[in-house]
Length: 190
Image (cartoon, rainbow, N blue to C red; front, side, top):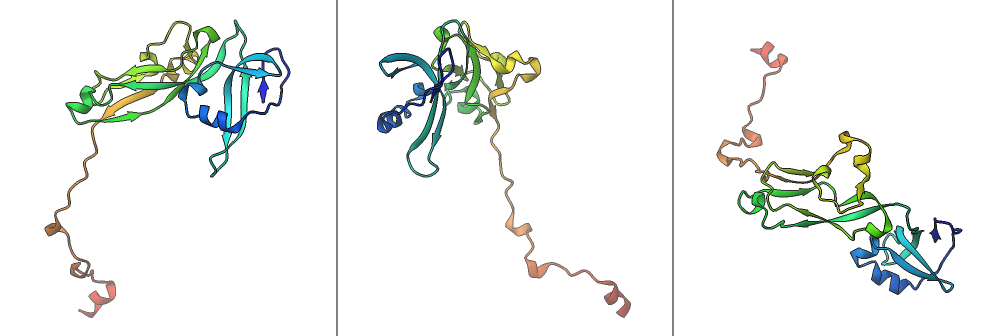
């Protein structure tokens, strides 16, 4: 299905194998695509994809037409750089926690990035990168931040690894060694 813009919604059929192969590429979800609809070229973005619950089969795709001069409301994936060499991981033994993997943006079609890079090289344990810390290309707005500062959220952080408390087996008590408590009836017999 292709909809939006100045045209009417149109049901379309596509070669399943070709589309399924394209779905393996990250850019398929964030690029402006050109579809040939009855000889007419339509620029659009993928808005929704439905898959069969257990078969490797696409069941439905929705595409939204793109118009020059009109902002798109879409999601852009995040690429995290320097994860293995981040200070908090390599030197301090921390663990990376991804709070979000993509962000919702408002952007003109000409300014649409394929992805946004998030460099975590200088993060230490306890450090967090928030939406307001992201380096956005010209013309890209984060939808959450248009709602106000209280919508700034964590994107990625480095935390200390969890350490399980070691149990000393000599301190544990076997079930048959647990002293029984005297009940009121036992106390009356004494």
